[in-house]
Amino acid sequence: MSYKSILLIIASVLLLRVSWLIHNGAISFFSDCTIERSGKDFILDATCLLEGKLPKLSLKASVDAVRNDIIGFQSIYPTNVASFIYSGTKPIFKTTYPSLIPSTQKEIRDMKQAAKEHQKIKISLKQLAHYYLNTYTFYVADKDISQLRPCSKTNYELGLTTIDKILLKPGQVFNYNDHLKVLTWYCDGISNDIRLFYGGVCGVSSQLFRASLIQPDIAILQRHTHNERFTVYYGEKAEGDDAAVVEMRKQFEIRNAWAAELYFRTKKQGMRTFLVIIAPGTTNKQVKISKNYISDLEVTLTRLVFQNVWTSNPYGMTNSKLTPTDGEKIIKKETFSSLYIGKNNESR
Image (cartoon, rainbow, N blue to C red; front, side):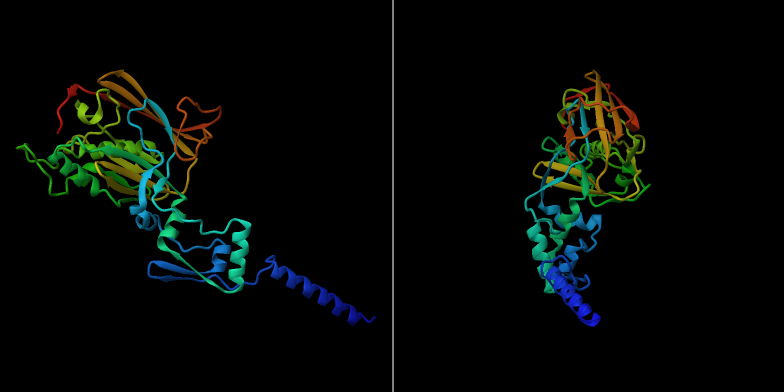
């Protein structure tokens, strides 16, 4: 047998082997990944999904696309708990979507076949948003507004809805008093004083304080307690997690101390509201809140931010009795003191 004949036989065997590999999906020669926008949908080559290449969607666009589908959250700041650990949470949706990226053997095999046939895949904006939301972390504080008087409720809702959709850039400071003083349409109630803002907005500053406490990368620059303990709204026992805003004398101010934007959204469901801070990505930081009840009118609240401390449910609260192991890093420790001059049992 000649040398040329041997080479032809080897080439034939290799060609048959490559053909078999292509047929069984071991080798692929697919078209380049192309992505097109069509209204609220995206048209992709099947190759894109095989390679994990998806259209880019910002934090704001992702959250806004599915906001109305959110019906709750897995964990929320618990105001009447003496000690707890919070590591972020996830929203609960009324509609769920399957994963866009094929993961099972059957899904991968079917997608490879679609890619070989140069098929196009259509995915909706909501499907894409759900995919990205799985990579975000949520920090939530809620409030029952059923006890608010009409005037206070008007001011509370004004103060809450106007911080909806705020994007806090890295290093940016947000002063809630500066925000309030430029708003209009306040209800002044029985007050004869001319003020920058009126009663009811402290409910929002308190809610914002709680959400900021459990977000490990927010620095709380200014916070003041109320003079009186309003039992109708905050309960008989002082919890130390309220924040008063009075003209420019008592200010509430925070700073985004992280390297990425933080997005603020608010939501109302009946007589319950949610203030949500959303951070892109996941974090290995956790926050432990501990309260020392000195009396019914005095309490100290300690905020500890840890890194890689506890292994637990990655989204939600864990056992408050757990303590950091040796060598774990405490990133931040701060204490907020609250001393009230008395109780006020009136609703406002």
